[in-house]
Image (cartoon, rainbow, N blue to C red; front, side):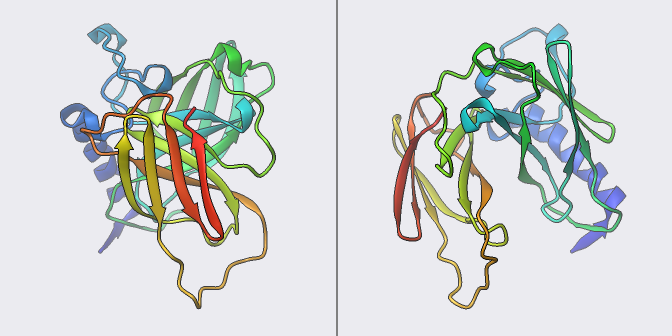
Length: 239
């Protein structure tokens, strides 16, 4: 069922606030400014930020950032402007064109380029805005090495949320079929088999997939992520 865009945006913001405060374990961030790596900050009320769950993590050796917001799956935001204000990366997202939005609430990933002047090895603070919503996210220092071209990567963007970057057709992104935690050091993801008659564009583009773990899952921050792709499987560290 579809609802007018303005109504669904208001409903999504309400659901986000409720989810962030009452079910913090299910959201990317709670009702406080996310801590480095998406961990719960455990701060005081004075540190509280608007309850808009936003997650972020380094990709491409720190040259880009995976940014995840929540909202309607059919009304996706786009990257507007990215600038550097002192030591803060300011990200302005554009709301989708007026229209109808599905009445759901999903994680929506975007990839933005790290602005000049930011050293990933020192970490960074992001200030993200979308319409009237605002959120601050702290990115921990990037400790990984340089990324190889067209190689898959995984990054924590929340306590129980991972962004996986693969490469393939821009019109046929991977779809998660199942996720399991084999041990605190290993997460395994299965992708759905695409329909045999599906037509995909013959290009090579980055594909961001959001992987959400069970709230009770115990996973080390330096765990690995294994996943199957057509023609083989891969295992990558979660940065």
